[in-house]
Length: 129
Image 1 (cartoon, rainbow, N blue to C red):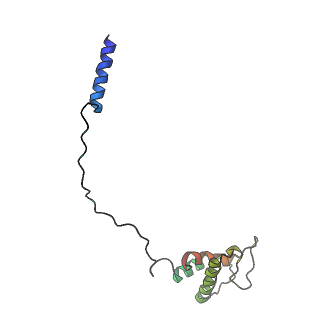
Image 2 (image 1 turned 180 degrees about the vertical axis):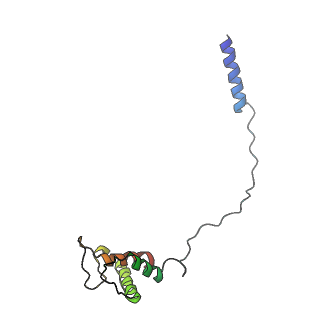
């Protein structure tokens, strides 16, 4: 009998603590937001100060070319011209792994043009649209 009384008491206490009553629950009052409405996000247009551009292209090419590259004396103008050719190849859908942008460039052991690959990669990330 003690167990039954104890179980009934525990059930009553549990119901009271969880809010199970016959009275309907009151709806919470609406709370005004303290934050201002945020404007929707929109993509920013690249500006002249972005990392994209000719200076970024030249910097990347010069830092990534192997020390024993085939164009050690290439001028900025020559590299930019090669970069523009790379962009044209990318835009046309050409397999850029097989593109040589440098006259007389030998392939590496796997049949690819290493130095042209550096130029293509830099162009793709900086000057190509």
